[in-house]
Length: 132
Image (cartoon, rainbow, N blue to C red; front, top):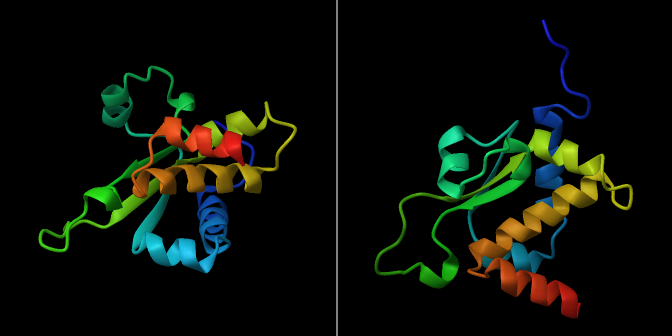
């Protein structure tokens, strides 16, 4: 039997992800509406295939849902928006990032995926971060 990977377990990661979300400004959380955060070890194979990702350690997070800019009161979406965090890729990344803590990395990924919920592209988020 193989040993468990080093680092916090899924339950602890879930708690850390929820704490990162809860630590965001009230106005930001209120604007986001209902969103659910899930933590898994790695993304499911069909997700990796959809993105053309061969190495599952390359995907640290994912937003699934209809961005708020496309949501409609007339045609509300039946599914709650979801953010997925992938524990093993985050643990792999943190080993290469002595400049940040695991909590900071988790917070960064939560914020990044929330950006997609608000309808921002990766390019827009990078530009906003560069301007900050």
